[in-house]
Amino acid sequence: MMTIISIINGHQRIWRWIALLLISLSLAYPMQSYAGNNGRFQLEFGKSDNKTFQDIAVIFKESGQFQSIIDGLNREFVIPENIKVEFADKEGPLYDPATKTITMSYDYIFYLTTVYLEKYPKANDDAILRFTTGSTTFLFYHELAHSLIDVYHLPIVSSEEAAADNLAVIISLEYTNDGYTIAMDSAELFDLLEETNEEYDDDELWDEHALDSQRFYNIICLTYGRYPERVAKELKELKNEKLLAFIEEKGEYCVSEYERQLQAWLQLLEPHLVSQ
Ligand SMILES: [Zn+2]
Image (cartoon, rainbow, N blue to C red; front, top):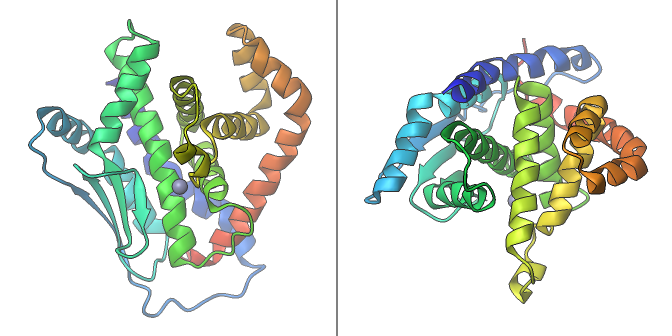
């Protein structure tokens, strides 16, 4: 359970960091009044008749990881209305703007473990748990990004899906201790999903999400942009020639793209943070 504990410790500090980092920017912008802005993020674990889903609910509830994330969000963000975060026996992960609800699906979390086990049949419990919690956390940040874009009416000029992935990477890498692991686990997830889809059906081509391989390369690129030496070292150790060639060609772009994304998001979110 080391992984879960380190994840919890990481998240307690996330939003304190975001505040410290952003406070330096705050003088450049006019202060806003938040009268009437008294929404809260609210976490719920839904019931299920399925035994496996009940176990997943217990693991995520008992670890306290998501409660800690939600507490951090409530300390740092001013939101105009409640945003419900539910783990449930429903379709997901998704954000529904009509009900202001982020749904994390037990079924999908279970699917994450099966995708991982298919690729690594001999994986031990720690590795499975790390991958599943890491990629679930990333997927939550992605849906959180959709919810923030919605309630703050953030101007997103490119694809909202790409924007949500970019913010999810930034939250992982800047504001969590183990964010590197979360980002790399999510990259691995999209790589594994890509392998499971050898041919795209029409459905997928029309899906608003980028294809899994594009999401994979985007996350690797941004993670490299934040931690060039660490990613390069890991790829060399893994002898991953394909990705080494990718960063050889795109590395410089990735570093400047990460910085550009980070600055843009800091500017967009700064007016919505609790003033210190
Ligand atoms: Zn999305």
